[in-house]
Each structure stands twice: as structure tokens, then as C-alpha cells.
Length: 410
Image (cartoon, rainbow, N blue to C red; front, side, top):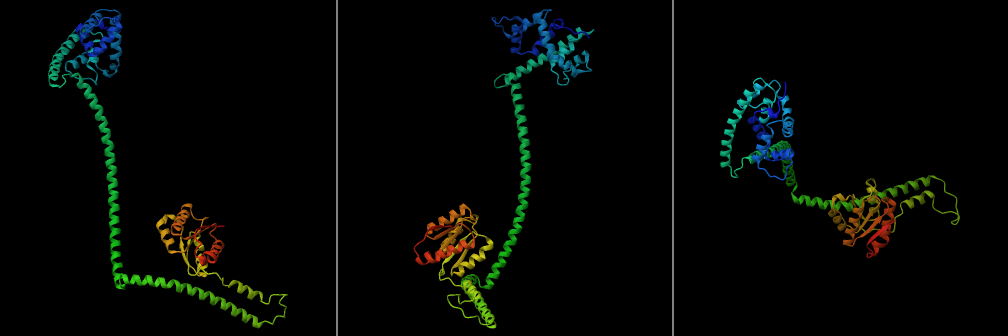
């Protein structure tokens, strides 16, 4: 089907197409492009009237306008497949939209092609648009008088702005809905944990009541005081028992040795200078059970850290020299206050640096310095290192009583 050009359109149709398609800014841009006389300033109606005159016949200006309108409206043709010019004309008359196509595009597509009744179609379209213009003017007038600023043109901008804000609010509402759902789930979890904690708390309360009742049956707080007194009395008795066990072992070995010696033949007489008069076995026993002349004199000894497997041997070594043994695991996670309480109790502190952390050693050093307590920092956590330091303290510091401070021992 042949296309009609804009200068072939009914002038009333051209007028409506220009008014629907371009705003004031667009009209000025087109007229500047066509005439290129920027020196003369025209009003909007003058530009519209001038463009109407240009579109009256075929010329470069009307061809330029025809090209612009075709480029703008022809893409809508694919949306009206199955609609002929008569159908488009009825849609305009009944004011029925077609697939969200602008009214200006419907007018263009309805009159663009040749038709045997094109003049009638243009007349019907002009009449429909003319009556719609009357209603639009009435609405515009009423709206202008009702609006605070009197500018209905701003309504569309505000609507677009509100539409954007609406989308933003909808997205925010969706996010808040997801967060609310998450909070509801967390609330259920917390309620379940609270229920379990209440059950545990109830069990603890019942157990506490039972313990209170048992304590009252045993005599109340006086029973606890009596237990503490018995614990204090137990420690010296335990040390005496261990000393007696060691003496008993030594005597039993000496008895067995003499019994074995009586069954053997008397050894030949030797000169004192040639050979030691003691038998090797007896000499070995006496060396093993030789009592050191040094004693800790009931001094309280604290040992920080060390190997857990050597703790019983640390205790045996300290108590064998007549001291009272205290031990701290050496982990500073238990708190600085626990370290300070232990330093307050004792007379001397031994701290191996090879197994304790730098922070723990610094905590021990500070506590000893503030309380004027002797502190030995050992290179090793072995028994020999502790033994040498214990003998050194027993021989010097324990008896002198004045040589105190922080020491490092190789």
C-alpha cells in the first residue's frame, strides 16, 4: 500500500499531529533546523503556524518533518498487526487505546496509507480529536484553578517522580518483609532456647535445694569450717607419712642387705689405703638415701607451669626438702587475680620460661616484684633445673632471709 506524505494530509490532521508530537522546545529545535535563522525570535504559536505553512506542499522542510514523524511512529506499526485504517479510526472515535500506543501514533498510522475513503477517515478523526480537545480544555481549566501553583503540566512530572519513589518503597518494603521473616525465625529459636534454659534452671534450683538440705543435715556452715580445718591438718600429716614411708623403705633395704651379708663368707682384710672399707652395695644405698643438710624449713614453694606428668615429682622434691608445695597450671586464661592470690600465699616462686607464655611470665614477675617475693625463672621445666634452684634457695636465700628478688637460672 502506497504511503501518503505529510503535505498530502488534511491541514487539521497536520495541526493535531504537530501539537501532539512536539512540545515548545521541540518546535523551536525543528524550526531552527529548517530555516536556520536564529536571529529572529518567534513565539510558540508563530512557530506552529509557520510549520503548518511549510507542510502545505512538498519542500525540504516538509520532507524533513515527514522523515522525523515516520522515524518516531513507524515502530508502532508492528503492534497493530491485524488493524486496518478503519479499525484505527473507530478506536480513535471510541477513545479506546491500542496496546499502549500514543494517540499521535494512532492518528499517523490511520492516515499514512492511501485508502479509497481516506478523506472520510480524516474527517472522522478530525471531528473526534476536535471534541476531545474541548473536553481537554475544560479539564485543563478546572485543574489549573484547583492546583496551588496553577500548572497542570507539573502533575505528570510529579506522578513520574512518585512512581519512582513508589518502586523504591516497594523494594524497601520487600527487604523489610524478608528481614521481618528472619527476625520471626530468630525469635522462635530464642524462645526454644529460653524454654530449655528454664528447664535447666529449674533442675539447678531443685538440686540447690537438695544440697542445702543435705548441708543442714550435716551441721550447716560449721560442718564446712570443720572440713577446712581437717584439710589443713591433713597436709602436715600427709608429709609426715611420706617421710616415714621413705625411712621405712631405707631400713628395710638395710635389713635385707645385712641378712644377705651374714650368709656370705667374711671378706679378706684389706688395708684402708688400698680399698674403701664399705661394700659397693652398701655405699650405693647410703648415697641413695643420703639426707641433704639443706632444708626449706617449711617454706611455701610455688611452681608455675611445667609438665603435667612431672607435677608429682615436683611435689616430692619440694616436700623431700622440707617445703610446702603449691602448683599453678601456668595458663593466664584463668586470670591475673588467681596468680596474685597464689603469690601472696608463698615464700618463693619458680617459673620455667621454656614452657610458659611471655604474658604469663610477665604476670608472675610483676606479682612477685610488687610483693617483694623471691622468683626464679628457670631455663627448663626439668627436674634437675628445679633441684638446683631449690638447693640454691635452701642454701642461700632461705637461711639469709634478705637476698630476695627476680632471678634467671640457666
